[in-house]
Length: 134
Ligand SMILES: CC[C@@H](C(=O)O)C(=O)SCCNC(=O)CCNC(=O)[C@H](O)C(C)(C)COP(=O)(O)OP(=O)(O)OC[C@H]1O[C@@H](n2cnc3c(N)ncnc32)[C@H](O)[C@@H]1OP(=O)(O)O
Ligand SMILES: [Co+2]
Image (cartoon, rainbow, N blue to C red; front, side):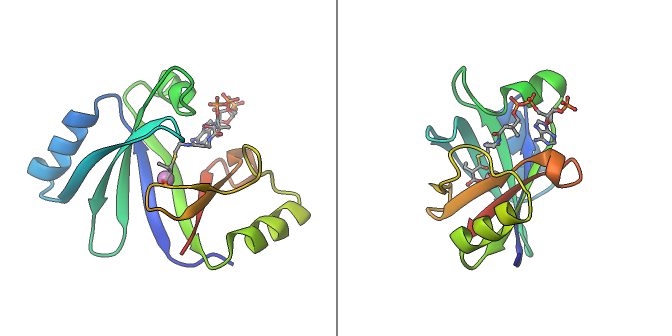
């Protein structure tokens, strides 16, 4: 079902400082900050030769990452995103096998303009999984 690793997301308390560190200390290709109001986060993508890093910062009081940053105030790895060919077929297969899809269960459009879904971390070895249709 899953294909390539699309991105690894890191929740950060200071987005500007994190972007600056990846650009100047690690010498990475760092994109602009993008507000994703549908998702309650501001993101910065870092392009690596084989995948991407998504720096995440809360946008608004109801951000889904507020709880994570309260528990991990210095930040930390928040989710991994795998590519799938057909997100609804993947969802139906996962639900049938007992996995919990977060939210309404309907894909939302993610930061790359493609449909995304999230799977409960307790069902995947303590790791929040995002699926992105490519
Ligand atoms: C920009 C768009 C998109 C893209 O295109 O890339 C994105 O990446 S958006 C990214 C942000 N959006 C989301 O994360 C949506 C899905 N997430 C959620 O619905 C929630 O964050 C959550 C996973 C349900 C957790 O919400 P929270 O309010 O923190 O709930 P709990 O406190 O009840 O947590 C339950 C349980 O799970 C543990 N937990 C929480 N977050 C994570 C995590 N990221 N990784 C691993 N484990 C996590 C939490 O610690 C609780 O465990 P216990 O304490 O043992 O009960
Ligand atoms: Co993501």
